[in-house]
Image (cartoon, rainbow, N blue to C red):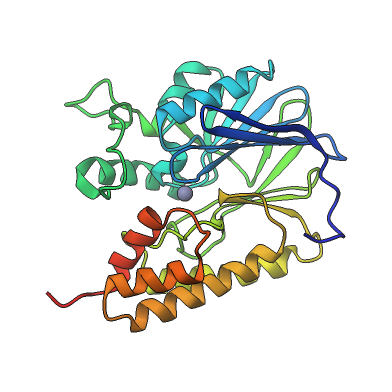
Amino acid sequence: MNSLRPIIHVVAAVLAIAGFSSSRAGNAGSLEVEVFKGQFATVNSFIVSNGTSLVVIDVLRKTDDARKLVEAIRARKLPLTHVLITHGHTDHFTGMPLFRDEFPDAKIVVASEDIRRDIKVYAIYMDSGGETSAEPALEPALRPKAAGNPGGFDYENTIQVLPGNTLNLEGGGTLELATDYLPAEAHYTTTVYSRDLNALFLSDLGYNKVHHWQGDDISRENIANWRAELIRLKARYAAANPTVYPGHGDIAGMELFDEMVQYIDNYTRITSVAKTRQEAMEKMIELYPDHAEADFFLKYSVENHVRENP
Ligand SMILES: [Zn+2]
């Protein structure tokens, strides 16, 4: 924690609802953010309010999780105007069909055409056996609309690309979006900065006390890119010293960047020299005994980066 950061006033105590928890943080400006923690994959959604309308950032990996998020939004009794999807991974966009049905007036938006395309490509990948055995299959409502599946999800017409790099809340307040990142945890990622809140939402460039996802197609080059972007982000936001909201895990401060760089260095070293996957797993768990998702994110990352002789 850094004393220069604005004091975050906890408006509501942590709620525990059927394994879910959410915390609400007030602010000195006109915006307020509520962190909504998904039960699956330690993934976060964020409800941003200006007291007049709401925006939600990411919509979780399971429809059951997303349904709880819908309830949290309805409890605020304000119109939801936008659903912002930060990147094309299922743990951030699975709730889209539910949100389309529950909030027909809310726009589902992304910051770039690349991200819209990535979302559909990843949905198809997950639906065609790309998923790890730790994950549920793609929810049927996300199967793309096609000649043979006319009731499927219409990615091109349901997801809108924002015209600029800002998202303006109805009634005031601006979210500044950035997508100028090298391919890292995802090919394309959106970060969100709010001046009102002095809050930086890192999406999946940020993991706090959760093993980083480095499975699937995340190459060593992507990991090196990720490290470089963390250093660049730290420098870019050093003067503002914002509260940092990671895609996975708890709210942090600027110290998160150094912690993540060190994690990447340890992971890279350990997975480069380990003779077996088990050895790599044991060494990472020994270094990071309190990190979540060892059986999921770490396991499949190690499978991706430690080759074993047959
Ligand atoms: Zn994620």
